[in-house]
Amino acid sequence: MKNKKENNSFNCYLSNAKSYGQLMDYNNESEDSVLTKRKLVVEINTLKKSLSDLQIEKEDLNMQLLQQFKELKRTQKNLNKDFHKGLEEMMFILSHKVRLPLTNILGLANLLTNVDNSNDENLAYIELLKASAKDLDNITKELGSFIYELNHKK
Image (cartoon, rainbow, N blue to C red; front, side, top):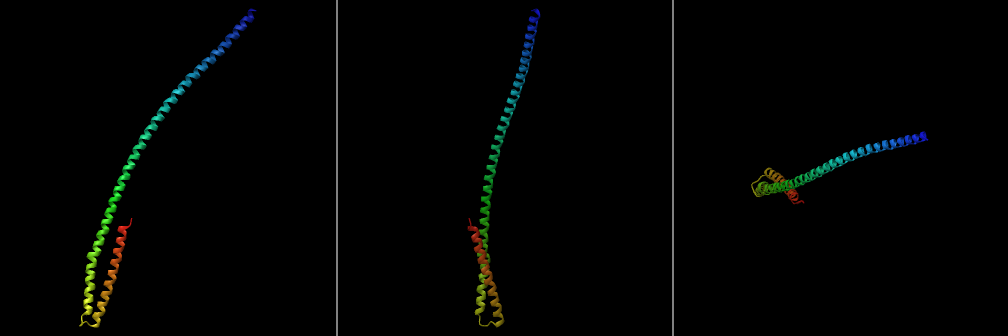
């Protein structure tokens, strides 16, 4: 009987030792789990901060982009003004500085044609002068129309 009791006690001890070992293993696993959870929480918080920093940086970049876009629009508007001003100056030059001497040449050529003492050779030269002046007149008109169209295109 004593042997049986001792045997039961020993089995009970072994059973308790196993339970204790398992409990210790569970305890170790719980501590590891808690440490792992803490590490994950720290990592999540770090990622949240990084995300927040990225969102702030994105907003800053959007503001910079918007400012650059506004500056580009202002520059484009100024360039358009300069372009149209240049076209208007070209129109003025064509209308007044080129066409005026050209019409004077045409008028003088017409006067010379009507002079009675002109010989045939001079008349031929005058006709060539008139033809060249008319060609130049047509070219300046075409160029003026072209510039006008450029200036009024939208």
